[in-house]
Length: 345
Image (spheres, rainbow, N blue to C red):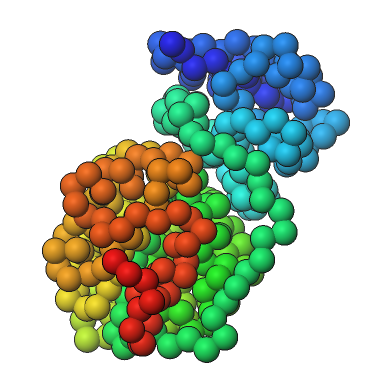
């Protein structure tokens, strides 16, 4: 059965490019298009699509306002299609926080539609299989008042589709004394800086894009720059971030497997966490971390937007314990704490 898609964009040219990209996949049927949210609202009622692709900047009501109404009144899978600008990146991160499943950039300078929308069909099909829930309002953040991580402890986290919400949930509860944390989130390159800035505002830790050669310190979270390089941790006496300019692994750059492999080789006390995402990137690397003595956690099926990466890791024995997202942050801090963990494994 094909995935039925509604394309929402105020540009006729862009609607045509998106439609053409999706129709190349025989498993997708574009059932309609809309020029703005008002037209889209009527089309949703009339056509009942499985997935919407949604532009950010549109007349009558912008994409964020419309997305907020969708997620509040009729939650359904939405893939954002955004310009590759700073403003576009900021709005797209806000959309993912509101509950959009994924995002894709519009063609930039020197980029063809085929290059820009090469993975759009797969993202749309993953969105159709995703679990979309009404957004929780007024979530309280409970940070430890006095926390000390175990000496030399390192935390590595990998995520993909649905990872923005998951990482916000986890890192917003991190204190300023959190363990040094390295994060690989599959995300277009122009969006990771805005995502890091958003996390920095929400977390007690200092969150920023990782820089090559930067020392890894407690109280800091290092986010792999999207699309540019793989993030690794060096095995030196003073561990540092290393950005590796090499080919994609498992179809991704940055790759979760590359990060986890580097932590496994470093020989330090470590915790590895694999969160919601499509595919299997990170599964083998998390297994190597566990075999090297690290503690490992995976997000459970019921709270994963897409239970792909956590499933793949769990099925090969890489995950010690699966946990719902609401309990993940506390479990991570317990396992990384200098005192004996409260979490039973």
